[in-house]
Length: 319
Image 1: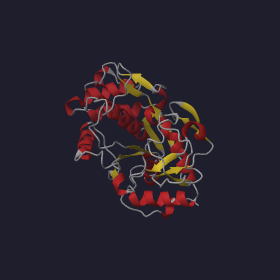
Image 2: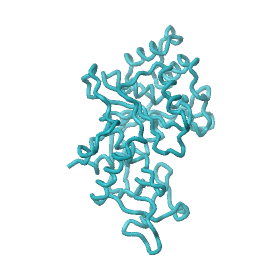
Image 3: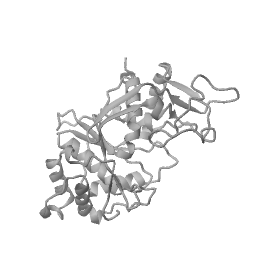
Image 4: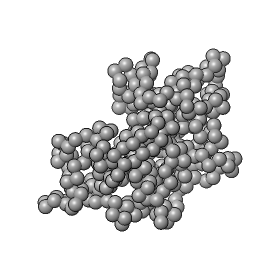
């Protein structure tokens, strides 16, 4: 029996949108670690258009679980920027930091089901371990059958078993052998913070998200998240991974690479550029239109099949 119905219901549950009977639910989930940039706009725009074009709901969630990295007031800055760019979301904005009870319940269910085990390995212990498919550490299984003598529990890992296959709506068929390509992965860190992989699964389930549209830099996390969905008896959403915008050096446009933040005065130009990037170039007469008008056109003309089926694309002016 899925654990989800037994979870305590708190503010995460968005009120249903009476104006829509579509079962499609999308979301945009930025982290408050810096201002939105062009890469953020791609994810917001594509997820918004994908949901709205099918009469669905679209939610915004602030992924602020890692409090040490969250910047004060950045959530408000993100929401102001989204509004200035013409985005309107359903229900209240959700915050990961308010979902700890749900994460604890999911963690307990996984532990009771035998999916988790304590790990005493430090980063130093794993320095020579091979790399997983996404570049993270491929855990060698040191603590899988019990903590070695002298090791105390630090983190908790999920037992990765079997293959996960899914049809990405943009990238096509994806198959991952979890033990060989991913390995047992952390769901609760040594500092006690729940890992992104577990948190996002619970967040999406609580909001009844049916379609996850995000950058291809997160494609390597998807098989792990599907494995968690299945272990918890939760519905698995559909996935669509957008090409990531990179600069001339091949670096992803991100907060870490100091990508230029979105400015209100440039909203229409930036939206038009994002639509170009996503294979939905607006007509010339609309390129200077107000953001809301551009978004309305984008929703009316959205086709996921037009998005380039690539993992990354060069942005011509290096935004």
